Image (cartoon, rainbow, N blue to C red; front, side):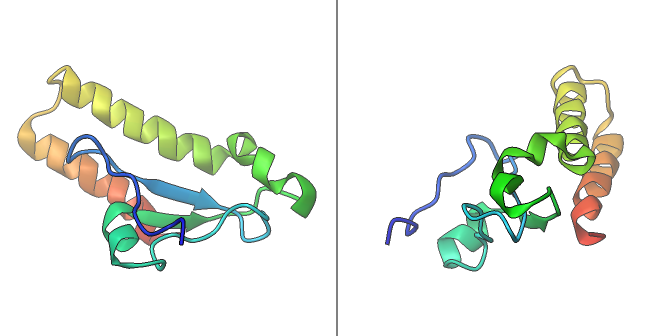
Length: 103
């Protein structure tokens, strides 16, 4: 019941990437909850953070999580400072989004 309405990104370039460990007792895939979450959450990314008791506290110890965040921040910074031409920006965004298709 509490998951009827998700938050929304402030800008169209925003991405909600739900990173979760299947053994994390707090985490869960969100895209399948309902149509609103399927629209709001760009990807549910599963990875292994560690043991059950500390899985929820270990996301920022994982290189894959840090890489996802760093790549998006770099892309946003380059966009904000007009360092990429529109075709280069589109290519970079496409490469970032393909990250989620591969794993």
